[in-house]
Amino acid sequence: MRLPADEVKPIVTRLKRANGHLASVIRMLEDGGDCEDVLTQFAAVTKAIDRGGYALVALAMQQCVAGGEDVDAARLEKLFLSLA
Image (cartoon, rainbow, N blue to C red; front, side):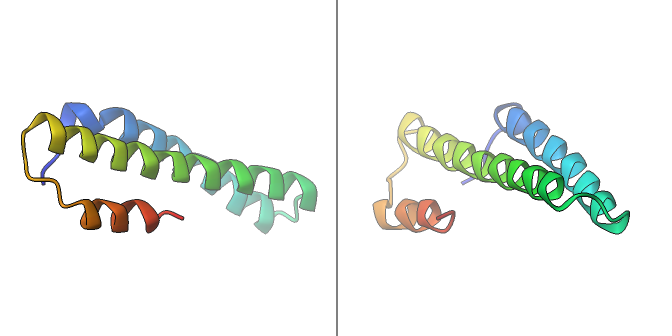
């Protein structure tokens, strides 16, 4: 299943932002940053990436239903659970 570029743009934007935050976390570690600050930022990056994944699965499910495609429930479940 291919997803339209305009539909995934918000997800790409979210992941690019998370990528920037990850670069900050790496810099903080290399510069000997405060452990609590680093872990707080690390948690934020993880959450942003997770939300991007969930948004992608939700979009894929919408596309399947709206497009009238046969939905392979087991396949969608496997994709969703891969994020857990």
